[in-house]
Amino acid sequence: MTPDAAKRLFAAAGQNYDAAYAAANKPGFRAQPLGLTFSTSVRNRIVHKASQNVVAVLPGTTRPQEYILYSAHWDHLGIGPAINGDSIYNGAVDNALGCAALLAAATAFRQATPPPGRSIVFLAFTAEE
Image 1 (cartoon, rainbow, N blue to C red):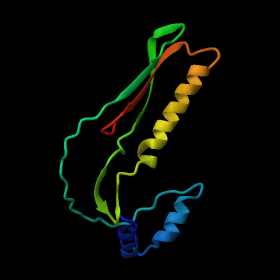
Image 2: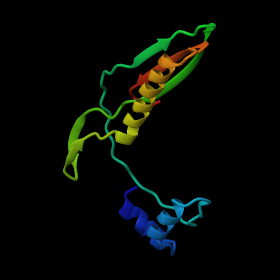
Image 3: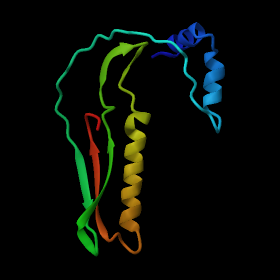
Image 4: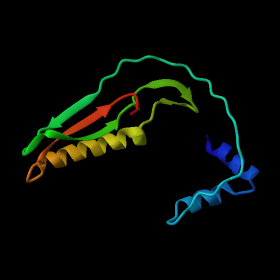
């Protein structure tokens, strides 16, 4: 839903979107029902693409047969038809940030003293979770 559509929805419920948004960013916020419903329709097309996953394993030192899994997806790659002048599939939060955290965790575990007892799997995959 676009911000403009959300503002119209809140207005129909007799509420102010900007005030609700500001309240949602404060400690102790609790969601409030709008008492409304809405429906929408979406046009979609499926495009099949080949992509690769990336996996790394840091072997454990005392219990290498036990695994801990850390993962993030990196499906923000590509370009397509322009929407509002932007044709790049942006991915800073979806989920380049998760991949950066995954790499930072891998580096930290690799440099840890003592090294991890259990094996650790780091997985970056495409096509969501």
